Length: 371
Ligand SMILES: Cc1ncc(COP(=O)(O)O)c(C=O)c1O
Image: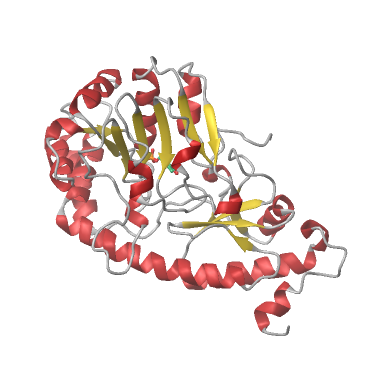
């Protein structure tokens, strides 16, 4: 496989039998308030889907009128609709490293794509000045996959302007939390004052619904109408609509906050364990359900981890990253501990992989406090 394969995703790496730290979908059992409504639709599949109740529920969650909401078959469909409906864009820009599907959708629709690469040296943090002023279609992720960086809302807002469609992919916004902040820190989902802002949301990650295909986009009514016109008829199934309604309610939003708080503690644990390993650098300030790390020879480390039962996500298929990057999903602390011990062993046993002629990196010793 070549580096920068835009069609590569973590699920290709999470093959059966491996502990999956490659895919960022939560695997906990579905709560009854979500499973119940989805299951109930099985008795009602003879009719075509009616998206209006779910659209109203999502609109209420984000305190917007219903015509500012479009339910989609996953956030991924949003990228395709934007790329197809906005074929007139003259200068589309994708801020990388980020999820590869926005660029793939733009290219598939015939757009020339310009990349803005955020450097590792600044922790992959967004610098609005890097985006060309005349870019009329801009894609940014927040928090960003794979860097896990959460950009300040003010930096994103600075990119919005008349004559530009600013797409903020908030597929992982529900995974973010900050002490003292009641909702999702830095989310723009409820902002109606920013010109041309489109926010994409996914129900895939926190609610473990990747197979159902449900997400939505939020934006100005005229733009939403153009995107809706590009959408295939009945694109969102009745079970997916039931999930959207359930996940828009106050119970779901409260549960999301609890899950995000727990995730924060689990991520802090993973980051602390990784930082204790010699030769492992955690990128930026991780804020989501995954962590990006730099390890010399990460491509070979990843293969050695597979042999020992762990799947992690390669970094080299993301524009702006290379062979020394890996993305690791946040899991419960027991899984993290098992993984980090295995990684420490790999770093010691595969010294060539980390570019060192020394006998091991001392990683396992560091873990056990022997150095
Ligand atoms: C950053 C990001 N945005 C969007 C998506 C697409 O999510 P969905 O399953 O809702 O299409 C993904 C899936 O991996 C993602 O990582």
